[in-house]
Figure 1 (cartoon, rainbow, N blue to C red):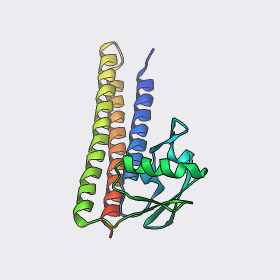
Figure 2: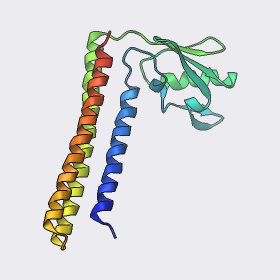
Figure 3: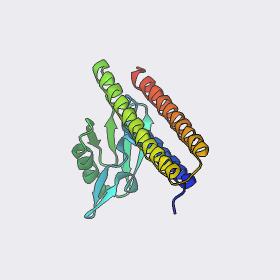
Length: 186
């Protein structure tokens, strides 16, 4: 049977996953600097199977504006190129027979502002996820109080939930501020 403690633990796990997801999404937003995370999640056709790019090639950053992709098999150069084109990332891969190189163009001021908006939207989605989790936990606590759980203890648990939500919200804000600074730094 589910208890208030197990509900709080489940909620904390949900909040941790929310923070992890936000971190992954923010890593995909390029801030004018090359990062292997920009290609995270891209699937390439590997002998008829969709396989993650990082499982068929080594992705590195020789400098701040270049991504270098070295496939473990030469015949993967063309599928990797096609995969990057199809992902519609606004990047142009160049195949030199050994590597696929991607030059990262500098961001315009307008593009930086639109990336900041996208970042704020992702942070807001994360906060909504926190609020939804809080709502479910508070409802469960109120139901338990109705079913005989001590009211004082229920109020304490509710304040624990609120404190947890405030803590995770401040983590989201810190991630947002750091990413905005990263994007706006020329």
